[in-house]
Each structure stands twice: as structure tokens, then as C-alpha cells.
Length: 435
Ligand code: PHE
Image (cartoon, rainbow, N blue to C red; front, side):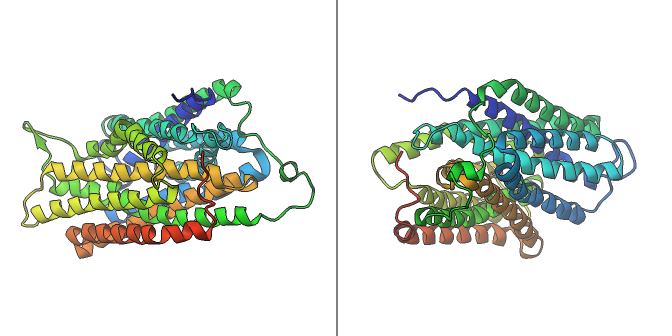
């Protein structure tokens, strides 16, 4: 029997759910708004596809790279709890600024959102870890639950904000994203009574009990090395996975047969499919890994991440299948896309919540938030690489790009499997804390 989770978990769950609603809602209409012509009803900015994708690439990278300053602010100045609060305000201000139809407002809005996500996203994740003491066996499942919250926001936002933005007007869409963040902020303020113990500022002197800063111990250094290796996996993983919003999205629109019972499903609806799969399969995948762990079979975090990369890569093999079927100018079966997303999500669930939990276990206390910040920054780099890889498809062709991603992920995953025992030995098993 698992024990009940701390009362702070639902508070962080709903705050992050609304933050992600706001984030993914805005992201769903950003490129559409940029590329819509400046005349007619619901005018946009009239940019070319290529320019819009460049801005999109920088935006999705910077939101997460700003997690490094976000982590530093938390560790050195405010503590995680207040930094999350600050982030929530910045995001809401940013989204509501985007609701104003004006170019200056547009760029300032983006800047506010980027700084806000940098303050909120890594620190709220570290706070989830802070709800559990070292060795608490509920930590992993806590992160799985938290991850499901993220994806409830991510699944519903493109549908709701996308609809409002396209039908009523882009700026109403951005405004709605702002209201989403305000709701998250309200939950967070209301829930402070359940968060008394977590995310408070701890001065370095307090941790070390002395004025001089003590260098990291050998074991702590080993742990940092393992964390840095896991960040490399994360870059590769998101560089492939984040094709969903770009190349896979365009491919779905142009070359997947989306007609069911005479109705052509809009391509944008498929953007919610991966998040839906996370909600449906989140607990199943986590339970599988937990069961393996109980049987004492290899289930260290690096192992799960290597397997996750391979499974996710296999999803791209299915996309190669689609590309082969559609090669002669026809359309490919929808099943290719759906099963590809399914495999990608099973991979994601073996990597993403695992990594969050793992960082809160391994990071030295005085660098807890910064380590999380660096992890998110790695995700940001992955997002940027994803854009570059997607662009390759315009010259190389989709079949080649999908197959290339498959081969790369497979090779990378197997390489990790070959070396991970050595890695474990190298780091004196530091990456495994038996809980
Ligand atoms: N769906 C995840 C989220 O929004 C994607 C992600 C993972 C983003 C890790 C950043 C870092 O949280």
C-alpha cells in the first residue's frame, strides 16, 4: 500500500497545470498568429513561415534556458517558493500584455513570459521534490502525478486557447492564457498553508553551518557528473520528441489521411494526442518500472532513460513507415501517427518524470535549484536542435529525417546501455539511491 501524498502536492499540481495551460495555449497560436496576413478579419503579423519558425525556435529555447537565472535567484536570493510566485506574476503580465494588439506589447509580452517561466517552471519542480524526505518511496510516484497535471494543462490548452484564438481573435486567445495563469496563481496563494515546509530560502551558511563555503565531497561530485550525463540524454531526447509541434505537425496536415467517417479531423487537434497519452498511460509506465525495481532488476534512472530513448526513437521508425506509404504522392494511414506518438510518450514517461525526481534526489542541497535550472536549459537546447532537425526535412525529405532520428536514437540508447554499468562504477553507484 502506498501512503497518501503530502497536501502540498495537489497545490503544486494545480498551479503547474494552469501554468502549462497558459504556456501551451499561447504556444499553440503563436506561429499561426505570426504567419496570418495583416489584412482581413483576425489579422496577424504577416510573417513568412520561415521567419515565424525562427522566432518560435528561439522562444522555445529561451523559456527554458532562463531556468538557469531562475534557479540562481531561488538558491541565492529568494528560495523556490517566492521565485515561483514571482514567475507566476511575470507570466500573467506577459500573457495579458500579448492580449494588447501592438508590436511593442508583443515583444515585451514574450520577454515577460520567458523570464516568468524561467522563475516558475524549474523551481516548482524542485518544490515537488522538497515535499519528500531523502529516501521517501513516494517521491517517484509524486512526480508521476505532477507530470500528469502538467499534461492535463498541455492537452486542453491547444484545444481551448486555439479555438478562441482562431475563431474570436488571437488577442482573446492570449488573454485567456493569461487568465489561466491567474487561476494557477490563485491556487498557489490559497495553498500556501500546505507549503509551509517547502521551498523556503536556505542560506549556504545554514546548510554548511560555517561561514566558509565547503567544497563538494567526492560523492557529491560523482552525482553531479551523472546528472550532467543525464542532461546530454535529455538534449537528444527533446531534439527528437519536439518534432511533434513542428515537422510532425506539418506532416500530419499535409500527408496523413485524417478523414474518419467522412470528417476530416483538423491537424492541430493531434497536438493534444501525446499529452492525452501521458494522462492515460502515466501511472501504468511508472508502475511497470516500480515493479521491475521491486524484483531487483536493473531499473536505475540512467537505464530507464536509455530504454526511453530507444522506445521513443522507434516511434520515428513508424513515421518512416508513413513516409514510405505516402512517397508516391498519396496519404499515409492515421495509425502510423497515433502509434508513433504512443511510443514517443512511453519513452517520455521513462525519461521526463524520472529525470525530475532523480535531480531532486541527487543534486547537492546548495545547488538544488540551479541543477534543476541547468536540466531545463538542456531541454531548451533540445528544443532548438529540434527546430534545426525539422528544417533539414525541407532539403533532405521527411523519410530521410524520420529514419535518421530513429537510427540516431537507437544508436545513442544502445551506447548508453553498453556504458552505463561502467558509468555506475565510475561514480561509485552514486546515481542509485535505494529508496
Ligand atoms: N511536457 C513537458 C512539460 O511541459 C515537456 C518538458 C519537459 C518541458 C521537461 C521542459 C522540461 O513540462
